[in-house]
Length: 415
Length: 84
Image (cartoon, rainbow over all chains, first blue to last red; front, side, top):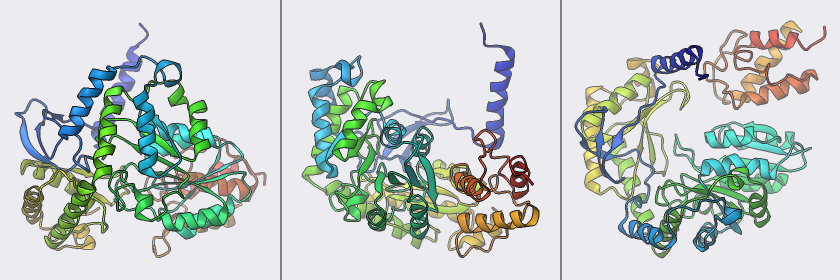
């Protein structure tokens, strides 16, 4: 056995350090399907508690939708459980191909390739399409999976201040000597819920002959008039060269992701993308359900319309209640508290009131920007939203922060 | 090196990492990375800037977050690569 005392002590001390610094993450056991109302065991061993979920990426409320669950059952019955192979040996079924076609149509692109996750898609894509003579020009707040994908690629890295188009233009000029340039951004940024300025990015990309990659995981299914994503929201469908996105959020929330975009790029992914070549793809049961999800949201926009209305309602009411929120239109609603302990304490108290939300602080968000992130869903009914507003108001009163602006909250609680 | 280099880096950090309306003071001892002004992902801009400006190559293993945490630390690192 080579697991020495030295190794054990080292790992134990690492874990102890995480606990001491408050970065140790604990799981909460949900004893029900993912939905607006869930039953949670927390802390571990406690009696399960009924709470309203405001921290899932279940934007369209499709995670446990009866038609989706039924489609999953049918998929299991007709195509089995596992593939026991990577795609290019014997791991591709007709339904994988059909789902890729449906995603292509929905996203308004040329072609699509599935990955086991969007994390895998982002880990793969840069190394497939760029090399050392090329440039990656990324927004500084891109998702961690993009950062990891960038690290795996030999292309030269430039990054620009978050959503700062003048700075992006400077970087495009700096990278003008490179063979190929790719602007890289999230469509919607997960901590603030703000949307990348894709209309301006397209203009700059055309001016400097750069490709665009957008990770649209927090937008696919509901942003834009038909829910196609942030590119539809900014009316630039067809102008984004690569979209990476997930099936793990609005589109049923199980797992799986994709690269969708220019035909040649997708084809190259099938030849070169390492997570695609050396790992099984999304299992048949998920593929069958995801096809149904795309059918459901292509027939009607009811769910994304309801999400939009819920978001507008919650944002208005929580602001009227006196909370300081990041303005916007996205169902991610950051309730700004600035102080990490205040965010944690309030999230804890809200859980006591039956509202499941999480406090976020450094290093997940910048120092002094601690907040509670509320995520609205089409699964929420107005009574859910009203219950949350009432609970937030009660806890906000307890901490005397209602009606207080940033400076006042910082004065009361520090940074 | 000395003062000129220090000012060069201060100016770059302000321009590259702070918002135009920020009134934050940056000195040679201001923590850059541990304070969150620069994160490990955006640190690459500073490294590339120094390499191009000073015509040196800083190996990745030397470009640690500690070595880049203050302008004083950065100047100490650069001494290894710049011939006086």
